[in-house]
Length: 335
Image (cartoon, rainbow, N blue to C red; front, side, top):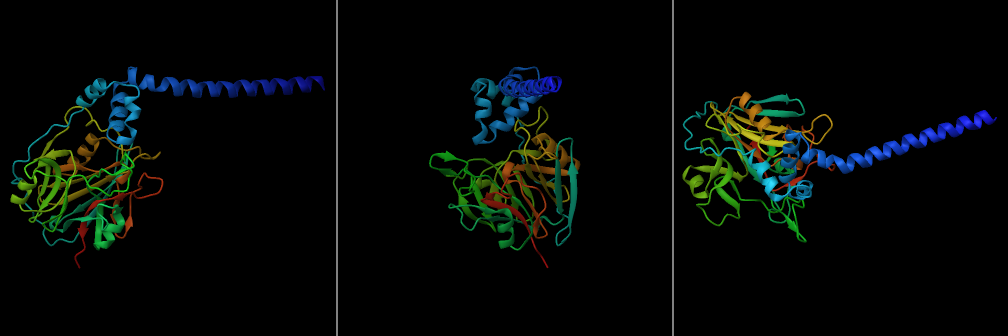
């Protein structure tokens, strides 16, 4: 009996010691982990974490709590996206008007999975927006259905404010301009000559990316537009040649155009075990491999959504599913 009691006590003591060790390890890792990330020898890890944190207002504290503004600025500048000027559209020759085909592809990388749609006729691309613009956004799929769209991705960004808190996620207040069917339906850019990052389509189906003013877009015959960026490929040249783009790893949405005019829509899932997300450079490289001649980033993170054939085919990272957004870019149905 005594031996049995001694064994039981020894087992309990051992279990307690193991539990205490696990708790110690968790506490120790929690305390020291950030210092290893920010001040250790792992430069790429530090760059990725800072980039991911600083591109979303509500998570910037993850970087600012441990690093000075000067250090953060230095890290971000090392990943700068080159600003290339899209001075003409002569490199794009639209060849497949009145082509109703849409091609679907699955894409993957070391840490991400995504989806591509290729729309052969670029004149089918339109911009849709929330019916409650200025009050709240709508789901990408709902805006798509309202416009009888065959496919759609989320569009431009937004800067919501409520009770002093930014980025509440309602998608109420778009950033920049929204233009559809040649009409400006929303605009908070006061100066028509001010250049902003845009995703715009001319009546002929040509994609404009990078900084353009409203005046320039009007003179170029732009029919559809939202504000977002940065441009990833301009006139066949990659804009990220150093670092990963500085936006960290996250869900991504992007759009591009090939030299034959075909449009490429890309959505990459993120913040999941089987798909952590992608850097801007990885997005750029995927689009380049698919023949992109001009390409640009769109709003990502929780907003990233791909609607196709009456359903959302990607896996949005928000726990509630799709996020409300102010605008979408969709493919109109032609029967």
